[in-house]
Image 1: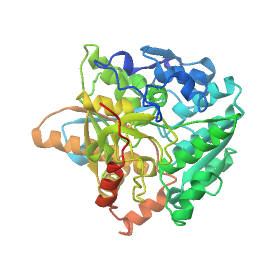
Image 2: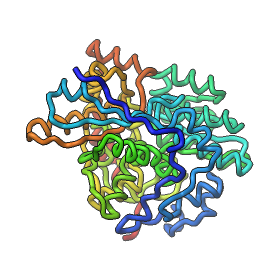
Image 3: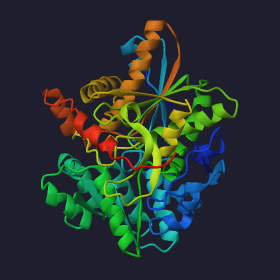
Image 4: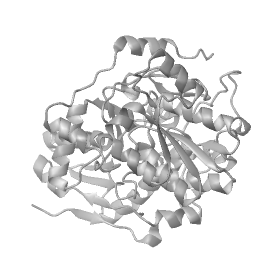
Length: 454
């Protein structure tokens, strides 16, 4: 068998700018609305939650936004991240396709999430903020913000979705090692958490509920701001460092992707890889086919409605237009906790409406099967979330095999699964269930979407 091929950029080639896809879109995305007035919000409306530097990034239409040198200095701990060619997986599949993957599991926290946690902590510290509150599902974001807070002198409180808090104790331990408080959500620490528990004491939690708790804490404390690990424009902006590096590395490999694959929950790692390539195509370059892979148990892109909705369950956030399952929808407790969110990033949702990407959904066992096949071929155990991207890439490679096409496939391996081995144990024991959402609950959640005039 051939050995794996690794493409490494030099430290000096670390990107100096993030890429903002809003500069190249043929149609601007729908405005964010104030939930009370239903009018477009301004920067001052977001000031209780975010420092002005991040708010300006959120609304910017500039193509390039400079990465501050203190942020790049921290990035140098692990960036540029490697790009691999998966020769062994290609041979196992017997495909004529070339498969490349960008590996984000090399970060200290084991995933792509520090790409936004570091700049968010930096900009908050610059603004004199003392504390950050946030939510996390599987724990990649929580552990990343905990690490970033420690580096820039910020106290961090993390509300972790209860089902993941119970499933992934080592992620919780990692957050505490970095100095953060990790609280199972819904909790008794916030008004909204107590209200949820009063109705259902055994509530498994959801990212929407955890967001509500973290937002409530930030809104009530002047020295505290809120940090979000996905969905928002500035988070997707920060993650484009993935795709910008990948473009240079693909040139090193004398290749260019025909297909780009990423897993999608809120959308940050997917956008991070795909947006620079989409933008390149919009400016007249080659346009790869873009495939977003989501869990069948929480299929916002393939089953959700494109409509204005709240980003949280308590309805404390502004209204954004996105593919949504409804803010009150509670996904079942499958292991890819980072993909258990009711809505898709508005920018990704807008790109889908513009026909710039496709979406597919796979079950939990389908994805773990792919993850095991990848680990046995390439030696890296993917996180449950990343298994969705692996599944999507394998399906594309098998399509190439059926069609006799030697296409080039690029996917984002967004994190390793070293904290998720209990899920792999359950898979091998035959105890990993393909969770299914309640169709009646979905219908009820969608029926409760806010009424926004056309």
